[in-house]
Amino acid sequence: MSPLPIFLAGRWVEGRGAPIESRFPHDGSLNAVVAAASAADAEEAIERAARAQRESGWGAALPRDRARVLLRIADGLEAEAEDIARTQTRDTGKTLAETRALVASAAGTFRFFAAAAETHEEEITAPRGPYATMSLWEPMGVVGAITPWNSPIASDAQKVAPALAAGNAVVVKPSGWSPLVGLRLARVAEKAGLPEGLLSVLPGAGAEVGDVLVRHPLVQKISFTGGTATGRAIARLAAEKLMPVSLELGGKSPTIVFADADMEQAIAGVLFGIFSSTGQSCIAGSRLFVQEAIREPFLARLVERTRALRVGHPEDPATQVAPLIRHAHRDSVAAQVEQALADGATLLAGGRAPEGEAFSRGAYYLPTILSGLPNSARICQEEVFGPVLVVLPFADEADLIAQANDSAYGLAAGIWSADYRRIWRVARALEAGTVWINTYKQFSISTPFGGWKASGPGLEKGRLGLRGYLRQKSLYWDLSGTPIPWAG
Image (cartoon, rainbow, N blue to C red; front, side):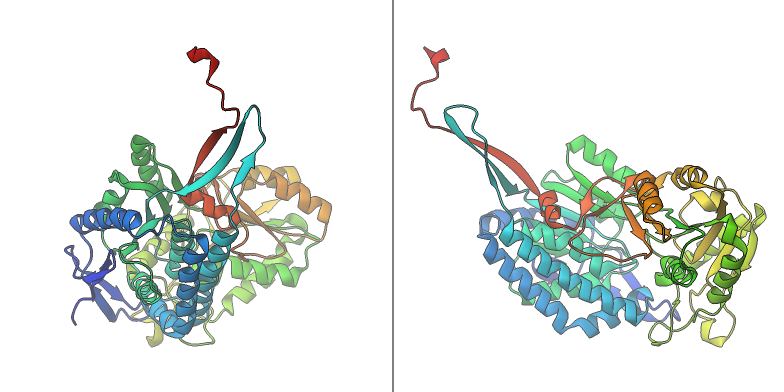
């Protein structure tokens, strides 16, 4: 199998780094080998990107002209949606239903930021003397985008679309665990007529490609989605450059069920919140707080429904829970469950790989529910990034809020209740960037998304998400025609 090339500043070349294998998580079969990027490739891509951003006229182009290209990228994603979705399913093990939705989301993101670019306004500010003042926004130059393996096409779009819409060049480092979809996006952008050099997609080692992206003096911003430890390391390096960063990091999100909740609606939402994407989601509702008054009947139905979830081949339309991304990751999830059991947890469902020939070669793990541990337990505080739910009791609002906020993370939360006054109180008290009410994991590109605390600084999405890739400049125009008196 010939290795796939990387996309280096508008050219398809063989990377000079160690090759990366993409394998199908269902059975470990080889999808492709990518001739991955090296540190030298990253240096070259950044230098070419800076030159292209200056010389192509992209940064100075009218917003409507940049928008036309972004709309063609959206059209291209939609035209190739089924093939891209199947590529992502093979690359990550996600169900086809999910990868189809992710491609549609990516196309919608490019359309949204095309519109945001066209309608972005600058302002003439209030005069404070015999001069006119205005506030302008200009592109940064070169942006580094480091994207995760769990939802690559959507995550890529959420960084690439606003960065390009703002007039920048972008160098993307996708995860080595899911290298294929970012390269497909590059082909779509190339066909759409994006000027050469403005986009690079460089699968490769974080210690090489990612490190160059963060340290290089021509890179003016890093947008990173991934683990908190890596995010902290990026922030330390960025601080040396005084470079802005956007960091969307880990989560240990609480989902809360009050006694007056619609039980069927809440159960369906809790199941979707933790077990869709096989739990491989930073926003997964992995801590479940159930009010004591309904704890027993709610858990009985939740466990029954969990055991009935359909675990299977990601290309089977009936599958709800697919394999995890890699066997090593599955084993890490299993080890965390074993440690929780050793710490005294009670196993209510799952806790093992499924049995049978259909699962024997895949990175499968059953949807798992644990109870019997306090919120301070390791499994309740650390992100598992797998299909593992821990159940915790609460007695009243004060107890709930104290426990829910007793976490290093603050990414998301869910509330299930019929009492709008209580919902308002609790939603405002929770330390989280996103709170879902009687739903979970619903997204809109028009609504800002970001975390609190160790879930990272910075926002994505929304019209103002464009400004995260721009820098502000103020102009003062003298209207008096009179020399400054101080100068005599």
